Image (cartoon, rainbow, N blue to C red):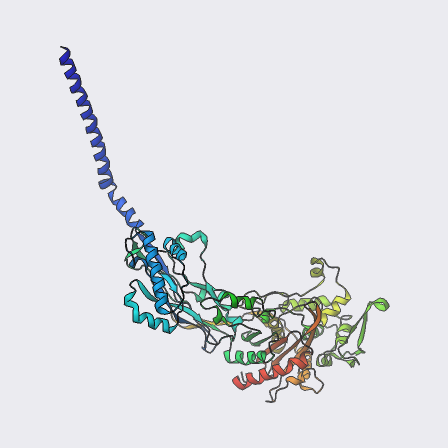
Length: 612
């Protein structure tokens, strides 16, 4: 009886185990069926997505041309040696791929006669972060190295010549500050995973290249690749989007005029200086020159550490665009003071003040201010005050004219504000008054401050570009245009050139009779035998009007001076306004700047004529 019970018990256990096994196999089968049948397509899709990568390729950068279509910035092919690491060891381990790449670099260096620039560590970094992209082993190699590689390319499977476009500046230093240069784009770390599959592009670093970067840069294309287990490409899928080129940009510059201006600056022997020449009819900047300058080609494809240090540490600061830097203007500010005084009606142009060299401010215990002419000018009316640049006339003027009105006129003309011209890092300058002075922690505004202000000294600072706009306003009757450097942009759809419109910022509605006085005084500066700017007079017979200036300032802890002159021409039918400053001079604008502006304007009229 017992034996039967034990046998039944064993059989029951076996049946139980069999049942459990059946349940387990059923559950496993159901799970496998669910994975392969119910969710199988999802798994296939996920695996497919994990083996796909998108590589973004940049479009060509747009060109920059002058107003007549002469190329100022272009792209040239740069020949690079690239290595497709997946073609060296398709299914090897990471270390084997790095070893193979390292060996290829050594052999290439020896065969081509060029030193290695990629280290073993950089190979590993590239494999980790940018395995889908070619490893650029050398950039911008010389033609002889290209020829050697072409003769031996069969010995280097997986190595290719890669051509990338790089910027070229055909005119070297000419207009370097306006054009600027480009640098390698550094993607935001927040987009690091995406950007690891981005073929690097360049972005504008300074000048027009920076300000108009969004127009000049092309749009990225997208290419879909399928990768293997090591992350290397093994098949190229159909491209989703082709890259497109950026827009061509036409500047208002006249490159031939620019060359004439920069030749004058080079003749100064390295002395810092700047020239701006604009069209008085619309504000278009035809010349913007600054010295010393730099060659944007030095930054292509990248500037060396030694060369950058030379530019950075140069005491003349060649990277500064002095055309939009700020200086005390001195007497070139006086035409605005004279015009404002006449417009206010507080004084007549025929009123005379006596210049005896010294003007006392503050009574017996005050301080003396002086004219530049030690023997004085005698009796001076407004027109002669401009011709002779008589300080004493303007010191007397503040007893009759509200200086706050002059401040407002300067404000309307844009002093103390950025002009909006398309170059980076333009500063506002300072158009000071009582509120400004108090805001800087100084004491209240005094009559001495007013006296300095009306002769362009004290706290007042302006740029050559701002001063040229004042001269243009006198020439055109009081219209203030926004200075512009962008003449036209190529429409990406039609390929046609679309011109930008000029922007009128203010119309000051200066009265003709007042304009005649100020213009007459500026004419006398150039065309009388005693005019301070007579050395600018043109031998061609084209008549000009102008104003000289000498600004006292502090330079490296010592007292110094800057020399100015501004002119417009032709006098009868104004077309050009030109302004020049030379830093740290021994003489004033009439002696230092006038001969240089004469040579510039003679070159301009010889090149383009005096007609409209």
